[in-house]
Length: 355
Image (tube, rainbow, N blue to C red; front, side, top):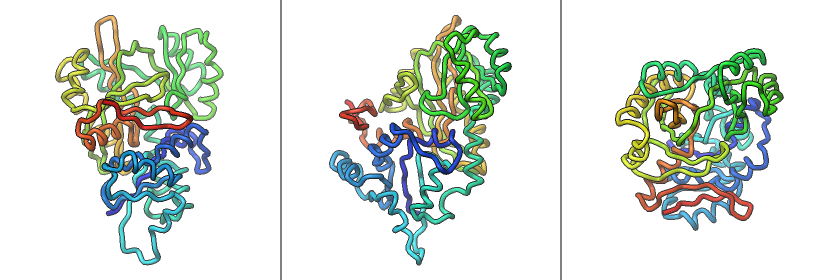
């Protein structure tokens, strides 16, 4: 089975839009253009990585070529050349995330209709990506596992939002589908920071909004998984990452034992394992007959009046994450680097591996 990899980091925005005819904002298009080579780090020999610009791919090969051996780069618009009239090879497409806009783009590029998930299956992926889907999971884990914390509510009307906010000293409201902090606002019970218009727009466009307490965050991290779409999921590793104002900055490249030592200053031994194992069956069931591939659960350590606690489910991302990318890059580079960062340099996004 040969694989085509597509880096579409605007996936969350496309998912929020929901329709096939989606145009990514300029920043999303630039990120996709500049880092289209990224899947080469987890590609196998004879795989194809689709790119927008072959010059970017050639430059990436010059920089990272020792790890890209056997990988072919091809303009996305030319993918149809891989499928001659006589089909003698089997292909799969492995994108950053599946959405209706990408499915249409692949079709327009000549990828046969039967290779991507069906329109119905992509609609189910979108439904499962709704933040409401994690409410029962979060509450079940918090009730069962000591030293965890977290609450989440869904509101369909402004009156419901006000009701939830009245019971919270401070809160955060989130669009059901959003990307990198774009659909997130911090709010006080009196809504003194003028977010009422944002809340109304989200409810009008997406049908509801998520309300959560605002926690004193100490550190962000995640657990990375892979689901087989048949009811099973496996844990692949921890992800320790930096964010600023909701935007991704970088990931730690380290052995699992080192990442656990970092978290041990706040969390007791065994807590991560218990939460990890409780998530496995739920994630497998959630993805059954809907999604197969990498996914991630974002978490955080928070400071409370009773000490440090684990928030076990800030987000569930039914897509590949930068945490998965960091795990693959760490395996390829074999301890040569300590951080993976994505940053702007002279108007372009660049990937930097730092020692």
